[in-house]
Amino acid sequence: MDFSLSSEQTMMVDATRRMVAEDIEPVLAANNPDKPLPKPAALAILQAASRMGITAARLPQAEGGAGLSALDYGLICEQLPTMAAFLIQCQETAVLRLHYGSNPEQRKRFLPDLIAGKRIATTATTEPDGGSDPRGTRTTAVDQGDHVVVNGNKMWITNGSIADIVNVTCRRGGPNDGRNLMRVVIDRDESPFEAREIDVIGMRQSHLAEMVFDNCRVPKANCFGESGDAAKILTVTWLAGRCLLGLAAVNLATRAFEATRAYAGVRKQFGTYIGGFQLVQQGLSDMETAIVASRLLCYNALSAIDRGERANGLSAMAKRFTIDSCDRAIAIGMRLHGAMGLSRELGIERLARDVRMLSIPDGTPEILTLIHGREITGLDAFRPTASESKPRR
Ligand SMILES: Cc1cc2nc3c(=O)[nH]c(=O)nc-3n(C[C@H](O)[C@H](O)[C@H](O)COP(=O)(O)OP(=O)(O)OC[C@H]3O[C@@H](n4cnc5c(N)ncnc54)[C@H](O)[C@@H]3O)c2cc1C
Image (cartoon, rainbow, N blue to C red; front, side, top):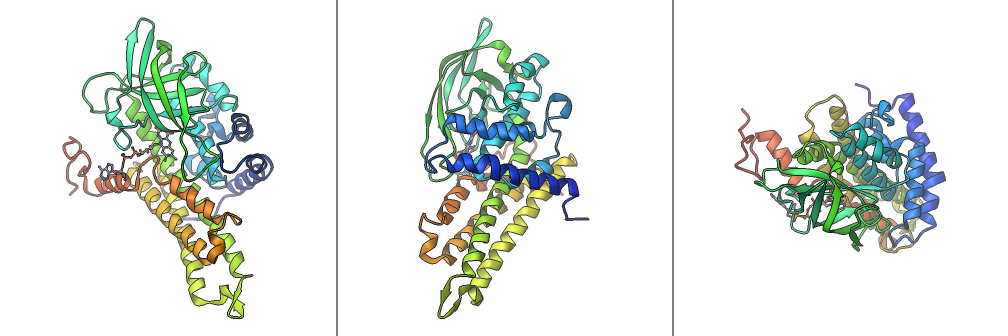
C-alpha cells in the first residue's frame, strides 16, 4: 500500500494550483465577496476548468471527457477554492448525469457547450417540501402531444439562477417508491422559467436558487433515459459527490490550519510566541489530525468507487466525518486567533461560514449516519418497510 502521489498525480495537482492562482483567484478577487458571482465571471471560471478538462473530468475520453478516475478528480477538486469547486462539480456532475442513459442525439445537443463552459448546467431535485426524501418529489411532468408540461417548485438549487440547462427530477404519478421519477432536461432558452437567488450564511459568491416551473412546456425529446431511472442516476453520482464535498472541507480546514500555524509563530503573549504554549500546540495538533484523517477517508472511498465496489457506507462515513472534523478544526483555528479570528480582516470567519454549507447537500449528517447504519446492519432505519431491509448476519 503506497500513500504517496504518483508523478502524474503530482503534476495534476501542481497544474490545478497554477490554474487556481492564474485563472480563478483573480476572478473571485475582482468581484464582491458577499454577492453571487455575475454569470460572465462564473463562465470564465468554467472555461478555465474546461481548458484543464475538468468540466467533464470523469466522462470517457471517447465522449469528449478527460476519463479521470474519481480519486484523481478528487485530488484536483481538493485544490480548488470552495466556490469554484462547487461551480465546477455542479457542472461536471450534470454532464455525467446527462450522459448516463441518454441517446446520441441528446448528448450531441447538450454536452459540447457544457464541456466547453459556454453554458451552465445544474440538477434540480430538492423541493420546498422534499429534501432528504427525494421520493417525495411533487414536480410533475405530464404528456401533451410532442411535449411534456412541467409544474412544480425546486429549492436550494446550486447555480439555479444562472443555469441554462436544468436536469429536473419529475414525477409521473404512481406510488412514492422512487420508480416513478424521471429526468426532464429543460433548456432555458426554449422553455423559460423563473428563478430567485436565496441568501445564505456561507459561500456567498455561489448561487443557490428557488426555481418555479409553471406550465413549462418541454419537448419530449428532452426526456432523458428510461422513465423511472432518475433515482438510480442520482444515487450513483451522490457516492463520489459526498467525498468531493468532503475534500472541499479539507481545503477550507487546511487554509485555517496554515493561517493558524503562521499566527502562532508571530503572535506573542506573556512575553513569548503563543505557538510555544502546550494548549495552542494541542489545538494545532487536533487541526492537522482532522485534516489528514478526513483526506484519507475521502481518498479511500473514492478509490473504492474506482474499483467498482459498493461504496455507499464508505462515502457516507467519509462525508459525515470530514465535514464535522473540518468544521471543528476551523473553529479551533478561529479560537487560536483570539479576537482576530472573528474579524472579517483575516477571512478565518469566512472559512467557518463556508464549511457549514457543505454539510447539507448530497446527504445531511443524519441521513449519512442512517445510510452507514444500513450498510452495517442491513436494516433500513429511514424506510423500515423497504424490501431490501434484511439483517446482516
Ligand atoms: C449548498 C447547498 C447546495 C445544494 N444544491 C442542490 C442542488 O444543486 N440540487 C438539489 O436538488 N438540491 C440541492 N441542495 C438541497 C439539499 O440536497 C437538501 O437541502 C438536503 O437534501 C436536505 O433537505 P432539506 O433541506 O429539505 O432538509 P430536510 O430533509 O427537511 O431535513 C431537515 C432535518 O431533518 C433531518 N432528517 C430528515 N429525515 C431524517 C430521518 N429519516 N432521520 C433522521 N433525521 C432526518 C435532516 O438530517 C435535517 O437535519 C443543496 C443544499 C445546499 C445547502
